[in-house]
Image (cartoon, helix red, strand yellow):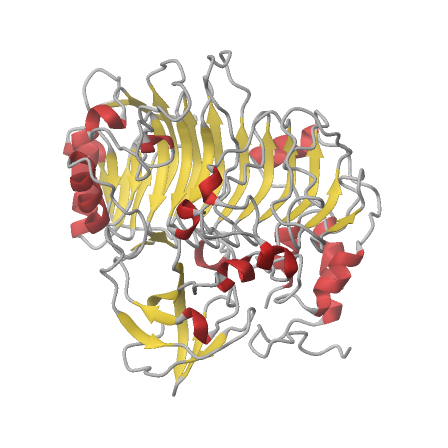
Amino acid sequence: MSEGNVNESGGGFPGITRRKLLGGAAVVAAGVVGSGAAATAAASAPAPAPHGEIPRLWREFAHTPYTHPQIPYVGRAGYRGGATRFARRPLVFDVRAFGASAGGTTDSAPAINRAIAAAGRAGGGTVSIPPGTFRIDDVIRVGHSNVVLRGAGSGRTRLYATRNLTELIGVYGSRYGGDKSSWSWAGGLIWLAPEARWDSLVAAIRARAWPFEGWTGNRRDEWRPLTSVAPARQGSRTVTVARPAELRPGSLVLLRLADDPGHTLLEHMAGGGPGPEAYYWDDKTKLTSYVPYEWPVRITRVHGRTVTLERPLPLDVRPEWDPQFTTHVPELTGSGVEGLTLEAVETPQQQHLLDKGHNGVVLQCAYDCWVDDVTVRHVDNGFGLVAASACTLRGTRVAGRGSHHPYFCREGSHDNLIEDFTIEERTTPAPSNTQLHGINVEGLSSYNVWSRGDMRMGTFDSHRGLPFANVRTDITVNNTGRHGGDASAGPLFGARFAHWNIRVTNGRAGLMKIDALAPYSATVGIGEVTEFDQIDVPDFAGDLHTRLEMYGRPDAVRPRNLYDAQRELRP
């Protein structure tokens, strides 16, 4: 192979060379350690080998970075393609000027929300919360783009939440019936979502109707086709469209892929071949409710009928899936939460799926948004991504009495980055009939990354719903949680999951070593584990086409962090 462009799909990023890919591994493996959770994880991990070893899988990835069968290309995951600095909004709105007061004796939620609304009317700004404890008796809502809620640091600014979402909004029932509370996997006491989405959500919940949580409206019929898309291959950054007139550089569109009666789209997400073809999809009603697959992406260039995208295509585009660029709910973009602790009033953890909604921070229908240096304590569910894409969660921490979902990523969330994160050990024993998951991904969510984590409890919770092409890398985990997911949600894993440099402190295999479980997956540099407690079985029969390298040798693998390595090597 030549030292020129290694893209073999015809549409990848120019300028990446094989020398750059292989040489970059050594740079990343040199062991740059970040702050916060990254430093904690590094301190608790064995020292890396002095030289390390480049696995064969990485060398293969150098040849086909956008179409590798086991390793997804995630080098542009996160806010603005993985930008390390978040936007700064010079116009400042101090919550004290709107009536907020520290000390925890009066409700500051109305004042904080007034400050947020004022920043929104101004076209954006920073809502500043000074050091101290501010009591909030209501949801803090960020519904306008380019609004940043900023405290003085997670150790200095504290929001003390006295009520839960059931009290504040109502019973959020399941779309599948029964008495399950959807506050178990949705909604936050700090909730970032477009105003239009927030209004429809609250109205539907109070009417005891199911509010669809995604990009295309409550009945999924509020979208409008912009143009059909010609066939293209996974990994391409350019597509040909029928009608480019409504497409503009910088605009966000949805790529919408519908399944066909033979479920060939779902088979493709699972890697294709005899196993997925033999799988019975028709009774997986929860899974099939997640299609069409909707992938938001910014357009970077329009030249005639050729459209260039911000990220490579996550899947093939085939005519039998009626590929369209469509409209969507106007996104929340350029907004963030920084430098604070959200602490809920301490109550016992509820029984499984009966959460009241003492929830942390949720991003919904958000694109290019972020959370930075934020701790949540005593929450039912910590940090959530719901139909959110291209967002970064950095330096986040879940602490206190124990959570159902410390992190959840669902309802078609894609291209997100969760890095330097910590799940602390619970401060009180788990009540009976409660559940602990961990870093959750489900609902056709794809190309998400969990990087540099310190998980003192929990697990790598693939929660069924056929998530695919997700990465967990450079994480220390005390593997104590369990996966969830109803049988009607279908397979635990789609294709191209990668677990890379994982230190399992208690030696439990479940959802860590996935070479016998997840189709077309890569397990590289994972510590030695044994099967006990929850033992998982593959959903697909036959050859899973998985890869296992450097088993039992965490931190000897080079590059040490798969996401950092891919990011170093992008143009």
